[in-house]
Structure formats: C-alpha cells, structure tokens
Length: 385
Ligand SMILES: O=C(O)CCC(=O)C(=O)O
Image (spheres, rainbow, N blue to C red):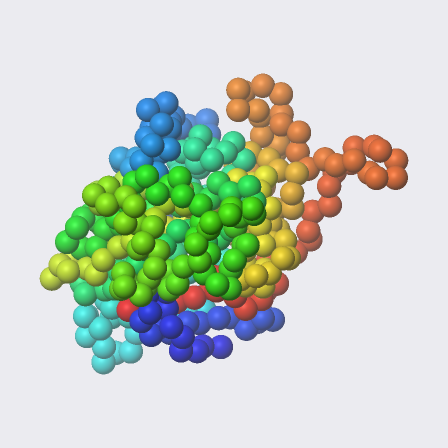
C-alpha cells in the first residue's frame, strides 16, 4: 500500500507502508564476503574513554572517528547505489525505469526507514559490534536496537528542522541514542547535522497530541508545534533552541566516523547545497534493553508494549526482546553474556512466579521481531525530497 503523505519537514513525499499481513519472503543470502568481523576473539573491540563519556554528556553528542573501516564504507556506498537504482527487494523500493537520468535516480529517495527488517545488510550494520561497543558504554550495558534510516541526500536534498528523537521514539526510562554513520564526508555545505549543545538537558517537548507521552509532573512543560519543520517560524521548538543561542555546532564527519547523540538534544540539518556531493548516512537508534517501549506497536499514543519487536543487541534484559531476522550475531542469539567486569554471567529474563514464588524464565513473545506482525505505523516509510 502506498500513499502520499506530508513528511516530517513539511514537504510532500511518498510514504510506503507494508500491508499488515503481507507475506514476508524468507529467501535471502548472506554474501560470501562481508567487511565486518563479528568474532569477539579476533576483532578489535572499541574501548570508550572517560573523556569520551564525559563529552557525550557535556555536549550532547560524540563523534567517534574512524569507527568503521573503508571496506565497510565501500559496502554501504554500494548498497546506496542498489537502493537508488531499486536493485533490492523491500517495501517502497521500485526499480529505476530505463528512461531516468542519473540526477533523477540520485534524488529518488531522501531517507528510507526500517530496512533492517527487510535486508540483511541493514541488520548487519545496525548490529555492528563496534557501534555496540560504544553504546554499551554510553547507554548500556544492555542495548536494544530499534530503528534504521538510510539517508541518501543528493545535491539539493532537503534538511530536517529542529526535533528531539525521544519525541518520536519514547522509551521508559529514556536513554535513547542515535548512531549516525557517515558514508560520505558531511559538512556545512552538503547538509551535515547541527546539534544545539546544552539542550540535551531539556525535557522532551510534546505537541498537542503527545502531551504526557514522555514526562510526568513537569509543571511548566510547553506544548510545541510542527517539530521537524525546517521553517523556524512554524516549528516552535526553535523557541527552546533560542535559549542556547550561539551554541549550535555542526557535526563534521568523515566517512567511517560515527556520531552518537542522545534522544533529548535538539538537532537539525539543512539542504544539501553542494553541486555534486552526496551526503549519505545510515542512522540507527537504540534504547536501553531494560526500558519499556511501545514504539512501533500501533503508532503514536499506543500503550501496547513493543519490546518484542526490537532486537536485544548487547547484554541482557528481563523484558521480551526480538531476534535478528537474518541471524546477525548479537546478544539475542548468543549464549548468556558475561557481566561487564568479565565475571559471572548476568542474570537474564527471570521472574518470580506469583503463585509459588519460584524464579522462572520470563515469557518471551513467540512473534519476536517478525515484521509480518507489525501494524501500520510511522516506522516503515520511504521519503522523497
Ligand atoms: O541526517 C539528517 O539530516 C537528520 C538526522 C536526524 O535528525 C536524526 O537521525 O534524528
């Protein structure tokens, strides 16, 4: 089912939502050679420093240089070509027609959501062990992988106005974190992301229909309008940004750098003003795996738990969790993890039987992360500029 809808920045775009009970093909093949080493015995684990941890909290974001290799970036670039030309099979992706010119092909898609539920490569990067090394330190030790968005921002491609990610993806308690993987160099000219430092300490400002969604008992929490709209007159979150005048900074990133940012920080990006430079990025979102979430169950306002739809990437949890659909190695499909200090295995998914008081494994949802169980919601979308 495809429909025309207004995208977050107010532009019209094509939004594709897979039909509720559409059969999902389980035919897929892992490529013979992949660029990433998943073997913990041989791979180079990324160790976060105290300075990096402090910087993440102080400025609200952290750029980790060279987290991914050039071979991995080459793989992600090839993948973006496949997306642009429609050479992959996923909802909303259509083969390019032979009469399309290179410019038309390049600007077909601005961002494509949730491909990890349909394509092995997206799942593999969502669960990339070096991303998880950093997340384990910043928001873990227990990490839940929730969202992917591939941005293919061609020259002229639109930006996105001020917003806070936890407004879109609420988790309780809230430790949402984005990991923005630079596929091309991103700078002021081609529409990098700008962060308003200091605003990471702000609460999440609701729009009228989301009052009470993120916070309880904050007396003077303003209601805002048109978050993500690029026009600061229309997007009233800009009034909160005003409090931090002069503190908005560009996150300049080279291919392979990853920008980690928390769910509360105000951020935005501008149009790609370059003549001939793409600004591609794969953006993944993670929560703490011990947080409750209903994101992705029935759309905004749903109270239905959806943890079973999100993959346990690292650590353990007492809550239901999803398995990686394509079998990418991660905590969900590995033996119980050891404690962060390397000691005894962490207790996992045990709960007291209310009748006997005995500790028993907690029930796990048998429909773990099966996209056919997803209902129509804002997650699976393709936006054109
Ligand atoms: O990459 C962009 O242009 C915007 C990214 C962003 O705002 C996000 O991932 O929340």
